Length: 234
Image (cartoon, rainbow, N blue to C red; front, top):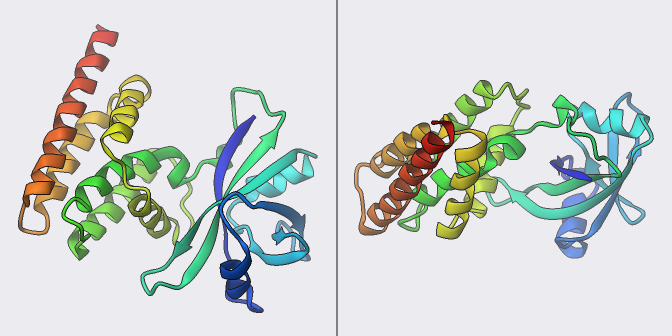
């Protein structure tokens, strides 16, 4: 079985946001149904429609057409910069899927580079406040890496991925695990991450004690990852 992150949007209609706030918790089950428009997928919590899958996530429609069985769980809640509920984060598991290749359309910013953004968010949040230049750098990094990875980015997806990464900012143990995986799967990302971490610490014009400590920790982990990658390849 494989799982893919996705998002339920359209919460501004018919009191859906109020229903979500009152009745839905992480771990709740969601079901999918086709709606009237071609390719449109409505999302239900029990009998209640709470929104829909973004139109760009056509892999969900294809999966339904192919008769796949799904398990969908709520994993989080996305709020915009005004503090308003903007989406319900879900994980779609295709039951019985064992093949090595997934639908390329299932790739998203979070699924492919979410952990990299989490590491940068660790630096940005080290002093307790993510300044506007730090947020902008997170978004610029996410957009550039998504382009390099060939991800078809939807409107608002970069901003959501950055908000998600800030909520799930890595700690030292997470960072060690992520960097260890990158050393095996994407070693070319490590020097990029090292440079971006240094830049993130300096972009707001000051480097506090906490930021310096986080950057030192990440620098050591990244350099160790680079050594592992070099030893593996050489």
